[in-house]
Structures are given as structure tokens and as C-alpha cells.
Length: 220
Image 1: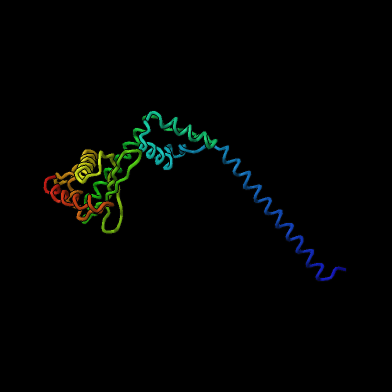
Image 2: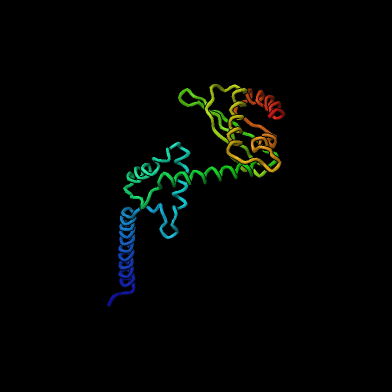
């Protein structure tokens, strides 16, 4: 007859054995699931909804931002998927990419119109140099500390006049993209007049830029 101590040790050993077997089964199950997922098609097109998934649309928009031609985006997606050993169930045709691009422009236009209606905006500018080229980025923030990107442009130099001209180009592009307000004022003009503060990473340029900015606001 086993003592209580021996019985306890036997049960403990059985428990540890079952625990180890369970761990092995979980790991094996996880491994098999990964194999199945790797062999499954990557769902970019939802056949039930008869449309591309939100992730696929966002991917196309990002590729368009990288200046990938609409006619090449489908092949681009297939090539990248092959690196991950996945096959997309469907890739967008050029006409679909163009429709998604229209959506992207509409969303950007609506956002710019909404931003231009905000008051007391703060304009931020930042410059960086890569491979001998200078780039300037502009963004604005509202009273709720929400930030919005206006644009990024390459510049010939970092002078305050060039920075201001670059901002004018961005505002002009926004005007071309957006419809005018009800009072026939352009979105770029409304943005310009609602910017009350400016901030830059260069104190000397910022001082000159602010002086030029005040004059521009009256002439724009």
C-alpha cells in the first residue's frame, strides 16, 4: 500500500507529464496553423462584399503616394507577396487603381476644407537635407493639438524667401484640388488667414520668414 507521500509524488509526476504533453500539443497546433495560413491565399478582394478590403485599398493609396504607376501596382503587389510566399486572391486593375486614387483625392480635399475652417492654426515647418538636396515639410495644428500635413517639397536652398515660395506652391496645389468655399474664397486663402502662429527648426530663418509671412497674408 502506497503512503500518502508516495501517492502525492506519483500524482505530481503525472501532472507534470500531462502538462508537458499539453505544451507540446499547443506548439504543434500553432505550427500547423502557421503552415495552413502560409498556404492560404492572401485575401485582398472580398467576394461576399464584391469589393477590395480596406487594407488593400489603404495599400494601394500608400503605393500611389510612393509614385508607383497605376498600371504597375497590381504586379508590384504580386511581387511583394511572392517574397512572403503568399498569393493574393486578386489584384486591382489599372481602372480600379484610378478609382481608388479618385477616392484618395476626395478624402484629402474634404480634409483640407475642414482644416481651413479651423481658426487659430499654428504652422510648423522643418527642413532636412538628403544626398545634396533640401526638403521642406509643412504642417498645421489646431487648438486641440491635432496635427495635419500640408505638404513636402524639394527646395533649391533654405532661405526664408525660398521657404515662403515653397509654402505658396503647396497652397496653390491645395487650391487646385479643392472647391471654393461658399463665399468664393479659396481653401488656400482660408488656411493662410487662419494661421496665427508659426514655428520652425531654424531661429534665424524663422524670424525672416515671419516678417515675409505678415506681408504675404495681406497680398495673397
